[in-house]
Image 1 (spheres, rainbow, N blue to C red):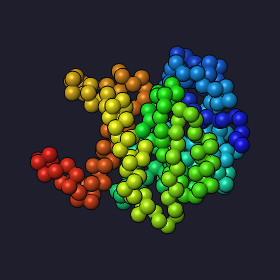
Image 2 (cartoon, protein in one colour):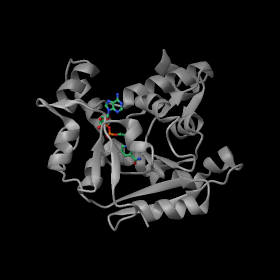
Image 3 (tube, protein in one colour):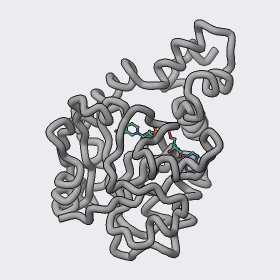
Length: 253
Ligand SMILES: NC(=O)c1ccc[n+]([C@@H]2O[C@H](COP(=O)([O-])OP(=O)(O)OC[C@H]3O[C@@H](n4cnc5c(N)ncnc54)[C@H](O)[C@@H]3O)[C@@H](O)[C@H]2O)c1
């Protein structure tokens, strides 16, 4: 059903004097960001974004959210009109007027294609180690849901599909049951137990170091997404005069 070769756009970096894409394609291992995990040989790292994405039918976004806008702008004129996007990205951005902007909506607006979402109580190292995880796929039509379920589901990675009909929009998106899916409270529990932002919280109170210093020491080039998202949430809440409702009167004092 699917092409066997998977092009993986990879932001080029130097690792121990060599190009990271060359190391990944030779060793079949992302020695910088996911050491110790062998990647299948059909996954090919490509440093040129246009080259990697121009013939793709499915575009899977899984990068830190601050890079999505620039990435989409580079791809804008080069992708297939019929392509479908899937975002695995947590966090959100803010629109020009300061309002809340979902990453999937940003992808749709820049690329003019549908963007589904895959999100759940799963941490990358656990998925890579094939530990049992589950996730929710949010999409607009049943066909998209079936396609993506057959792409992502594995015995150790259970996918449930939540079709949010176009037009039902926000009302459907806010259904109470969504809160009890993998992308809801379960994701919150997973990230509070094992995520890297939890590690940041614990370390920041035990040391006198700044977030930037800790990022360099603990994450070896990755970044904590939590502080960036917290900043955006603060911006949106201030703009809507909702700080007190969110944090409580005394917390703000
Ligand atoms: N959907 C889910 O269930 C789920 C679970 C875990 C994580 N995530 C999300 O996946 C995303 C990626 O998480 P991660 O743990 O791989 O993050 P990470 O910090 O490990 O990401 C590093 C990646 O960013 C790339 N990068 C660095 N600079 C770049 C640039 N200028 N332009 C483009 N790419 C650049 C690097 O090549 C590397 O691949 C995050 O948005 C995270 O929220 C989703």
